[in-house]
Amino acid sequence: MTTSGLLAPLRERDFARLWAGQIVSNSGDWVNYVALTSLVWHLTGSAWMLAALRACHAVPFLLLSPFSGVLVDRWNRRTTLIVVDLLRAGLVLLFPLVHDVTAILLITLAFNIVSTFYAPAKNALIPRVVSQDRLLSANSLSSTTSNMAMILGPALGGILLAASGTTAAFLFDSTTFLFSVAAVASMSVSGSIKRKAAATRPSAWQDLSEGFRFVASRSAVRAVLLMELALAAGWGSVNVIAVVIAEKVLGGGSAEYGLLLTATGVGALGGALFAGAKGQQLGIWRLFPLGFTLLGSAIALLAGSSVLFAALIAFFFMGTGRIVIDVASVTTYQKAVPDALLGRVFALRHMVTHVAILTFNQLAGFFTDAASVTPILAAAAAIQLVFVPLSLLFLAKPRALDPDSS
Image (tube, rainbow, N blue to C red; front, side, top):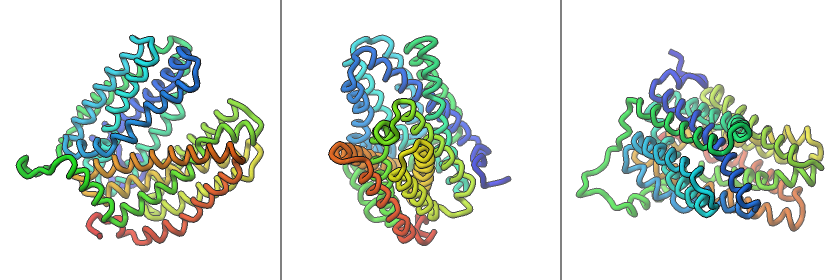
């Protein structure tokens, strides 16, 4: 049986079921995103309320992720995924019943509080349902489906809204969560965690501290987290000013902005496919400098571009480089972190990268208003290119990814 290749993990029954639930529910997430944005806009006509809606998505992950990780490492991870999706299926059904934006924001906040448990539990469960030599391919396939959903989901959401309205879109999203529940419930893996006896079990605060201490003590984990912060500096800077680039640099409008985002999604899909097909052969540690080279060069190209074609190429390779680094990062955590700590480490990673992206969003927006996009892009490109040699230094030896190494 072949152990390599992007589709190889689908030969493992439990991973195939987890993946099937993910691709369906991810598509529903984007349908929900389109429907919810449309609903809030039509109720209020306020861009500020759209910003408030985005805050209801981001704030739970920023504030609660470390604590969610502690609980994920205490609970059965398979059961956690099932309960989270059942709760989300029910919460989504509340949207058609309310017509007040405050209620919509509160439901969105509750939805995303529940969602903080999902990614740490899923990422921590993957090493249980796929063999070690297929981990990179499994993460690449997971990223591939997420990016396919990002490309196809909004289009499906637009069609549902045009044909049947927001209620149909929310019903569809709820159904996708129930499909995910059925897929995960049919898995044979237990998802339970080996824990100490209740009498000797540490408190939640001690568990949280243990997660922070582990990250601080492991060189491979620290290195990858630092590289993800560098990635956030580049991606967070460019992402927020993409609409400015479309209008002020390219002289376009909404259509050009949409094309830039589509190019990013297609590039991300290509990056995930590449990492799955070639990552095992190259070695995880070589994916980091490759990703930073692609990302830094693409941002540098964008800084010197004023035509749409060049900008589309730049956004395509930005998407490619970002996902190559992301897939390598997730796989590194799964290989370098003990199973009992995976939930906490993934939750901490989620929190840190969200904070970094939001920080660089704000900095890029401020300096773009004060000057122009060119110096922001030049600085972002320089940071990515500096991390090409730094990433080689950090993870120069494949044994840095060995969970038994110090």
